[in-house]
Image (cartoon, rainbow, N blue to C red):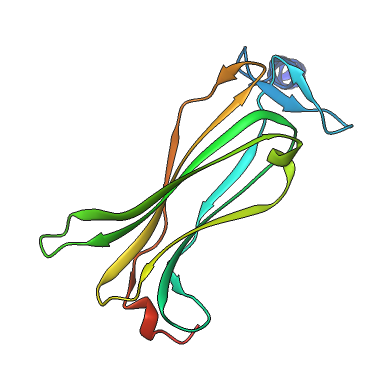
Length: 153
């Protein structure tokens, strides 16, 4: 029992000091800049589809913000409609690219299609490049919404 009590703090210390950061990525320092060897953390969200102000268009929105400056963040925002068999069909896709300091600004990018009946979702695919290294593309599916132009948001 005494050995366990003496070795437990050592195990905790080793785990804390080992870190979990992969090589060739970036992380935030106190000043908000990226350090080589650490990952830049970016929040990317696919919002549920909604209608525009006049109620004539369905909007698909993707949002992003990085905790530190990245070389670039590429975001493809797609508005999809569910087909009768359950598969999703892209209605519109647009690519947005932010570089440098613009990656740290809270930003929303929007795609739109004319109002239509059916079930829709927003899909966002993003890739972050920091210190010249591209992270694996990540896909975010927003929740499906049925007949967004008739909803009272």
